Every structure is written in structure tokens, then in C-alpha cells.
Length: 220
Image (cartoon, rainbow, N blue to C red):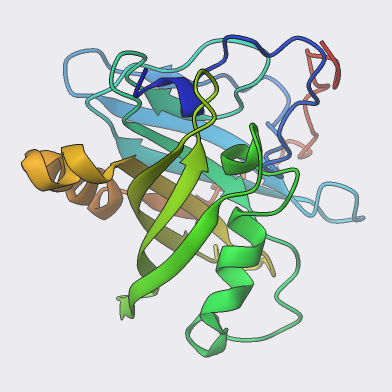
């Protein structure tokens, strides 16, 4: 039951969450089963005359989530521990360190976002916000609805946001677990996943950057 709020059962008729992720044409999610390393290439500014390819990577102890509801996500279907990528709206030239916490929480917890699949999260509280190199890191707590019982389940998350060179959007990795599991030691896993995250502009190859057509419909 703990896993239900981040799960996919009972999804019939729901719109796919909007994460802002657009895959580069020809790109798939690759995860090394031995190391847990996850690598994917996405596209930022996909609708502009000059789209940018971005290589995203992180290390996850959980397998890649399969299904129409997921873009780039790794999760444990039994515990609900999970990490997923999303892309913010334009930063409008602002430095990532100057953005308010609310910019990130509003993007992350938008009505069409991944965490809002069964209703908008509540009790959102950012406990820490700091820079780690060029990355912005937010540590937070929030509650989401249980699909099965309708009860609110407190979760803890670490969100890392990175702005690849030559772009005006942030790529975010949100790694979370239930508050109970966080206290039982899963905090260490969440921190390791978060610290492994990288999002960098793809090396120039001379090939045009194109977005991959979405293989799933928005409604299923």
C-alpha cells in the first residue's frame, strides 16, 4: 500500500503526467543492471530553431519504471522509493542560485506533474535549499494521497536542479521515499542517487538534434 501513491495501477482514464521530458530521436533509457547507472539523452528548447541535446545520468538502486505513465523514472514498485526527471519552464535568464524555492516547488507539484497523479500534494515544506557546485539542491517534505485509502502519506525528497550549458531550462531529479522509510535509513539511498545526478549538453556530432515522437497517447 505504501507504493500505491507513486504507482500506476488504477490509471485508466487519467492524463499522463507532464514532466517536460522530450527524448532525443533514437534515444532510449539505458540502465546498467550491475552499477545502476542510468543514461538518457533528452532535448531542451525542442520547439525552437536551435534545440539542444542534453545527456542526463544518475545512479539508481531501483529498476527503470515501464509504462505509459513514466518518462524517465526508476522505482521500487513494492516500497514506492523512486527517482524521476523533469524539466522546468524557462528561467528567463536568471541564475539558478537566484531563483526562489517556490519556482521549483511550483514546477514539481504542478496539477499536471508526476507527484499530482492522484491529487495535489499538501504540506509542502522546504527544509534546506543550497548550491552544490553548479546544481541547486532542495530538501523537502510533503504529503500525497494514497490511491487505495485516500489517506495522506508523508514523503521526503531531495530535488537536484541543473541548467546545462547553452540552455535556459533546468533539468530536475526528484528522489523520494516515505517519511517512515526515510527514518529507517533509506535517506542514505536518496542522497546517493541525488549526488550522482548530471545533466550536460550533448557533444556536437554534426547530426541535427530532433525530438523523438512520443510513443504514448496522452490519455489511456
